[in-house]
Image 1: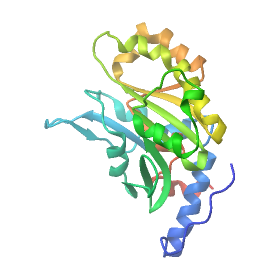
Image 2: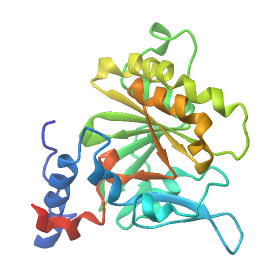
Image 3: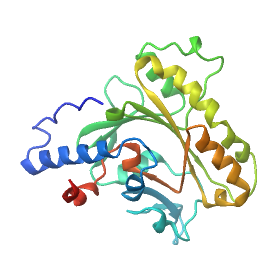
Amino acid sequence: YPPPPPPPTKNLEKPNEIKGFYINLFLQQRNFLPLESPRANRISTFEWRKNPRGGGMIQGGIGGANTLTGLDFERECDLLTLLAAKPGYEIGTVPGKAGKGVFFKRQLVARCFRKHSFYSFLKEEGVEWEKYLACRLFPDDALLVVVRETLFIIEVKFQKVSGSVDEKLQTCDFKRKQYQKLVIGIGLKVEYVYVLSEWFKHERYKDVLDYIISVNCHYKFKTLPLAWLGLPDPDIPAAAGEI
């Protein structure tokens, strides 16, 4: 991918901030595909867990699989809220554009579209969905990571009993291809990822989880690593010595 333009010095006034910006981009680009990179999965993640004091969910911190022991989903948690809680991140509008902008240190790194706003984005790009689909799909979260030119369709699924979600997991290949029809003409690729609760680690789901991987889709348990998405990770500068 071509390198992004240099950051405006008026937004990154200190030399160390500018240096950190490029170090961060270098490390993130090094963590591009394959998406199953072990290092990308162990850096910084979103983690949803039960709040022991009640009152809903709380955000976890840094870590990978080991941080999840004994934690489980109770309900969907808002992706943008979790992003906004990460150091350096802000959520805001992009003037004249659909969806929400995801900013890291005042730089636009992603755009998020939900439901109808995704089709507003397509209209901005001159895409007429009717030419490609017989029926619209409405994403819960469609995250366009700017530097990767990749649209991540993110579905969060949690449950503690068997139900209709079981069969919905088998639809990822069809949906990914439908979304790909819509954006391939504007130079984007699509990655489809489920964020699943511990319930889906049961042996009965082995076949469907294998299927998800076999059709080039993805699943994560409880976490969604920033580096895996290709987003700037506020914890990466600590690893700058690896360059």
